[in-house]
Image (cartoon, rainbow, N blue to C red; front, top):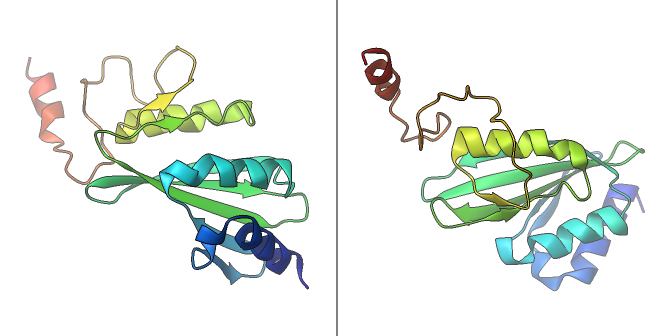
Amino acid sequence: MKAAEKIKLDLVTQFGFLTDQVHIQRARRIWCDVEQAKFWEVFELAVKKLNFQFIATITGLDEGENLGFIYHLYREDGILLNIQTHIKKDEGVLKSVRSYFPGAVIYEKELIDLFGARIEDLPEGVRYPLPDDWPDKQYPLRKDWDASVLDQKENK
């Protein structure tokens, strides 16, 4: 059994709710879609038991009513596990993964600035990547964002 197939089997065996949610896209590329309430269980298993020691990035997605987030984890053997979860746009809250990957703070700050994600347990600090004087509640990677707000800011 190949390593990716073993990881898929381990995920599905541990979490029956993932039976139809884990897919091997191609060699060494695994995708897993997890509801927010179960995200931490799957994430911690991947890190603690399946040896995903690195985070490549976190991708944000505007899915209409929801925001989607893909945590791209990888191992030394080159296998990439993409764990996707979703939250309601204006209600959901993510927990920071910085306790496992301190460098993920920069990715989480991007999710806040660009998508308006709410992330708990994130340390206070400067914004990233938008400037400090960026208008409040303006998230430029949301599909419904109106760039004309910047024109209004410049005309003041």
